[in-house]
Image (cartoon, rainbow, N blue to C red; front, top):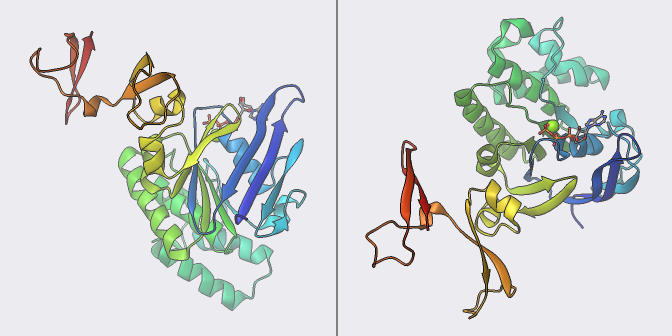
Length: 296
Ligand SMILES: Nc1ncnc2c1ncn2[C@@H]1O[C@H](COP(=O)(O)OP(=O)(O)OP(=O)(O)O)[C@@H](O)[C@H]1O
Ligand SMILES: [Mg+2]
C-alpha cells in the first residue's frame, strides 16, 4: 500500500463533461512527485482534490492509512502553494509565516522558534519584519513556501509555484525547493507544464492527458521508454515512422509498430555510408547544436 492513494477519482464541474476520468495515482512517502501535462489536462484539479478544495463524483483518497475522501480542507492540514502565492499584504513576513501556527493556537515561544528555523531554511531570515510589497518575486515565493512548510504538513502541494519568476530565478528556486524537500523529507506533489523543470527535480513524474494519468515513472524511464506518441513528443522525439516488424531481434513490439528515434541519435554523413539518403531542406542554429530538416 502506498503512502497516498487516489483511486478512481472522477470530477466534473458541470455534471456533463468529465474533467478527471477514473484517475488513479500513488504517492510514495518522502518523494517529489510531479504532475506534468498540457494545459487543461486536469493537473490543478487533481491537486485541488488532494487538498480537499474540490468535490468529486467518485473515487477515494487514502493517506497514510486514513480515508481522507470526505475530510474537509481545514482538517487535512496540508501545505499548499498555488501559482499566485497570495501572501497577506497587511501582515509582515513573520506574521505571514506564522499564520498557520496561530490558527493552530501554537504556544508563542514555540511558534517564534519554528518561524525562525523555517525562515533560515528558506533563506529569508533578514526579511522577517518587512511587508510582502517590500520583497522581490523570488523572496515572496520563499515566504509562501516557508508559510506552507512551517506547519509540518503531511503533504506539500505546489501548483506551478515558479511561474511568476524569470528564467534564472526559476532555476534557482527549483533547486531551493528540491533542497528543502530533501532536507525535510517531505512528501511533495508538484504541478508544472514545464518538462525540463519537472524532469530535473522529480523522483517520479506522472504524465497526464485528458483527465487521466498516462504514465507514472522515474524521469529516466519516461525519457527512454515513453509509452505512447504523445509522451514521446513531450520528451523530445520528433521523427515517427510506421512500420511492420519483419524480424524480431529481442525487442518486444507488436507486429505493426510506430517507431521513433531521437535526432541526437542520428548521424549525418556522405551518402553510401549511411542507411537513408535524403536532402537537407532547412538548417537552424540552436546554440549548442544544429537542427536539420531532411526529406527522405
Ligand atoms: N471552475 C471551473 N468550471 C468549469 N470548468 C473548469 C473549472 N476549472 C477548470 N475547469 C476545466 O477543467 C479542465 C482542467 O482544468 P485544470 O485547471 O485542472 O487544468 P490544468 O492541467 O491545471 O491546466 P493549466 O496547465 O493550464 O493550469 C479544463 O478544461 C478547464 O477548462
Ligand atoms: Mg493548472
